[in-house]
Amino acid sequence: MIRAQDVQFQLTRTFSAPVAQVFQMWTDVDHFAQWWGPKGFTVPVCKADFQVGGALLYCMKAPNGMEMWGKFVFQEIVPNQQIVFINYVTNENGEIMQMAHMPDWPLGIINDIRFEADGNHTILHFSAYPYEGNEKEWNAFDQGKNGLGKGFEGTFEKMETYLETLS
Image (cartoon, rainbow, N blue to C red):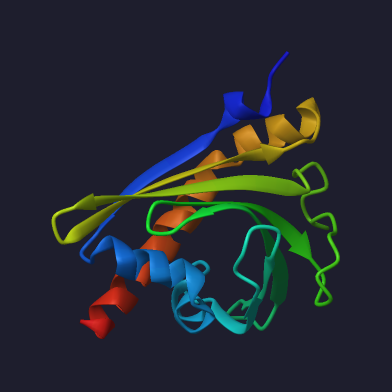
């Protein structure tokens, strides 16, 4: 039997900024809204209660105007070291819902972000895997990892570009 951790998605990226600044990109909604989401997307709504058990509610808006809502529910926070949250697709009220165009996609995805200092740079270790769910959902996640990788590469490119504007 396959387990959620067996289909884990991993990505490592180095940013030209110190750990405290990269950590802040995830914890300050004003910064987060500037870089989150695939290329071409904006974040017109972003509200957060950044503490364990708290949540971040966001709306990503695609270039064609389509809105996608999501919510992070924070599980673990170690300043400048690690953030663990479950990412859900939601409606504008933060109510968890299934993705209409991907009915087998897991309802929740565990995201584990670790920050490693490397001089004046930060190595970000990102991993994700389904939260709870069943084998059908884990298979859908496993098959979708290539698209997930492209999306996060674009998202992290946006973060790097935004970080450069702060220098």
